Every structure is written in structure tokens, then in C-alpha cells.
Amino acid sequence: MDITKYLNRAELNASDKRPLYLQIALVVADKIQKQILPPGLKLPPERELADLFAVSRTTAINAYRKLEQQGLVWTKVGSGTYVAQARDAEPLSEVPWPQLFTAYPQNPLASILREIVSSPAPGTISLAAGMPDPDLYPLDTFRELFNSRIGRTSPADFGHIPIEGYQPFRLAIAAMLNEKGILASTENILALSGSQQGLYLLSKVLVEPGDYVVVEAPTFIGAIQVFQAAGARVLSLPCSEKLSLELLEDFLIRYRPKLFYVIPTYQNPTGRVMPENERRDLLNLAQRHRLVIVEDDPYSDLYYGERPPQALKALDSYGGVIYLGTFSKILFPGLRTGYLAGPPVLINRLALEKQLIDLHSNNIAQWLLAMFLHEGKLAQHLSTVHREYKKRRDTMAKALRRFCANDLEFVIPEGGFYFWCQLKQAVSSQRLLQEAAKQRISFVPGEAFYSVSSRDQEFRLCFAAHNETILLESVQRLAKTLAQITKRNKEKEAQPSLLWPII
Image (tube, rainbow, N blue to C red; front, side):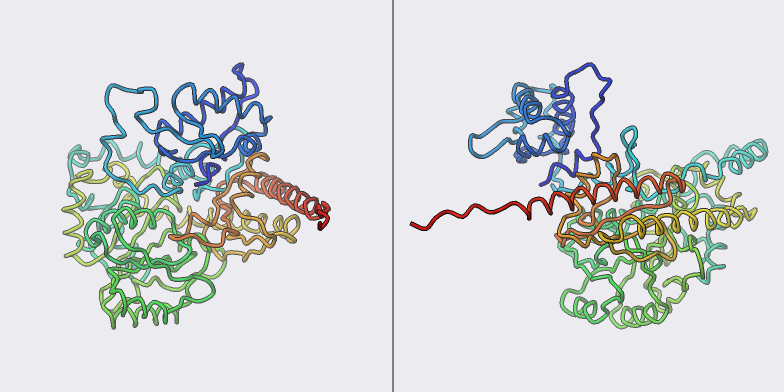
């Protein structure tokens, strides 16, 4: 496990009166105490720790000594430094919490979603989180809706409501989906606390330990983690220029997977759009094998040219497509409101599972969104973000071509939030991330989007969350990092090798 996955966002505070070694020790100790760095994990050598925080090796050694004094790490001569077992550490509580936890997959990237959505260190430009720019949130519209309607609303609307969701909200979602060619009524709609909850509920209802699930490779981090946590065996279907339906059919015959999770429109992280003929071929294959398809569609409204093809759900003639939608990308993530469209029998079963989690999703958010949709406010907002995000996409594309053309390959996305970049030189995206942290820039390494280890020379950049000036600065910082790595590699290659005389 590479500790840089957890510490690349950490920053030392120059104005802090505490010595640097103590600041480093506190950062590492925090990760150990939260079980982010699990017992038995081998920590990096002092020299690597020093490079990570841009300090001297002596400072790194002192940091490890402090952690060892606290009983949080131990050192084996000739082997390295390791995170101590819970029994070896100083008691942090009267209750041995780690010993009470249920088993959890100790994937090196298990906490990456939490890291991505957390606030970046001061001065750091984060191109990691896939979120809209807060400056574009339609807060004024929501404020006006709230103030003008709150006095005329029945108090009962803010008590307990059906698990399936607030009825006017479900009506508004059904109407919106019908406009997109997806036949739906309220009995087909389940309100969610974000589409991530939909994935979790589907894994609880459809997937048992040992079942096979097919995902694209690469794909959304959260989906991989949900299915792995459910005990599923994840099969990866390469997602490049064309979906390999031949390989998918082989999976269907050999393994009988429970479902296929796919993002056909502005895929996360690649930005790929599945052509309509490919969508129809996929549906024909799925119908023959009675395959359930989970279509995740967070980005189809965020197009910057021609409209994308119709959703798989709109083309579905056999009733096997489950459709997930969210307002986190097109409005703002704090709404924590999404929805799932599927057959009534599935909605009913999912509702039984959902009642064990939260009884029902947030009333006020559903109430506000119902009015927002009913009054046609969404189209106006989308017009604004289409225009703004297109400018940002074009700014980043131009900057990447100007400053990073010798180091990166990428395709300009037709919609969504992301550039999917491929490194030309022989350097991993993990190493690039570690070096980029020194320039106060962050992104998501490609490894996070695969269920199995892959060639780690890919990474994702989000262009939506910052204005054009900041995006330009971020690419310049990235280019500087790439130039420094290239320079070091050339210096290493230029160093003469020591040839010992043959005796």
C-alpha cells in the first residue's frame, strides 16, 4: 500500500509554532487512529517521507521516533517501519473500538471518496472532486421558492412521508423522464438520498456474496466500492473506443452475472458516449440473456454541443434497465437527492430496504425540487451551466495542449465534467500526484477507477469546479510538475554507470 494515497493532500503549516517533525507525526497519527492506515501496514522509508513533505531526512526520522514513542508504529531493523497493532498502541479509549468493527475490505483506496470530497488544504487547487462550481449553484432561485411558498404549504408535508418519496416530487420526476422518452409514472419512481444510495440499495436487494457483477473498466469509484463491499465478484469490461459486447456475452455465458453497471453518457472518468447503435446492440444482448442493466446517468444534461443519444432506459423494450438519476451534478450536491426508475415490483422491494436506513429521504429538498421542476427552472439553469462549463472545458483543453502536449494524451469530452489523461512518459500517476502535491494541485489517479490493478499512467481532471483563471493556473502547475519529473529522469539516465573491472 502506498501511503501517498492518504497523505498527498496533507500540508504543513509554516506559521504553526510546532516543529515540522511534530506536525508530520500528528498527520500520520490521525490516519492511524482513524484506521485509514491499518495495523501492520508498512510505512515508507524516512527518505520517501521526507520527499513527500519536502523536509529533511532528519525531520522525517524524528517524526517516526515520535510516533514510536506513542506506540503507534514500530521499527524492525533491516525491514522498515510499520503501523502498530491496536494492542501495541497507547489506549485511545476505554472501549476497544477497532476490535468491535465488522470485517471491512482493506482496499488501499477504500477511503478515497472521503478524501476526494473533503476540503483541500489552503492554497491547493483540487481537480479531484467531480462537483459543480459553488458560484453556479441556483441558490437565489431556491431561496425565492422557499420564501414565497413556505407559508402556503401544509405542515403535514414536513412530517413523515411515504418511503418511496414525496408525491409531488415523484410526479415531477416522472414528467421529466417522460420528456426524455422514458415511460414512467409515480409507481416507477423511488426518491433517494443521492444516487449513491440507489447503488447501495440495489446491492443489498440484488447481490449476495459470491455473485458476479460486470462493470466498465474504468468506471465510477463508488460503484466498485459498493459492489465489493457487498461481497460481489467484479468482472471488468474494457471501456475504450467501443464496448466489447463479445466479451460481455462470454461473461454472461460463463458467470451468469446478476447485473451490468454502466454509465453510457459522458462516462466517469473517460467522458465517453456510447453511440445509439451500440446501445441497441447492448439491449438486444441483455434481452437474450435476461441481464439486468443498471444505467447511471448523472451527466447527460451537461452536453456542450449536440444532445447525446437517448438513455438506455428510453430504448428498453424488455424492462431490464434500472435508471439512476441525481441532482448533485446539475444543481448542487448538498441537496442529497436522487431517484431511481424501475418496475414497481423492484421499487416496492427497494422501499422495504430503504426503510431500514432512513425511512425516507429529505422532505424539504424534495419539496423544493418539485417546485423547481414544475415551474420550469431547470431548463434556465442548464442553459447557464452549459455555456459556462463549455468555456471551462475549452480553456483546460487549450492549456493542456499548450503546456502539456509533450507529456499527455487526452480526448476533449463532449459533455460531463472530466478530462481523462494518459501519461506519455514512463511515470505512474501516483508518483505524479505525489510530486503535484508539492505544487499544491491534486487530481484522482487512474488506479482508483479500476476494480483490479491496472497500468497506472492515467488520471482524471475535473474542469467544472473552478473558473477559467484557476484552471489555467492548475494546468501550469501540472506542467511544471511534469517538467521537473522529466528533468530528473533525464539526469538519472545521464549518470554514468559504475563498471567494475573483471578479475
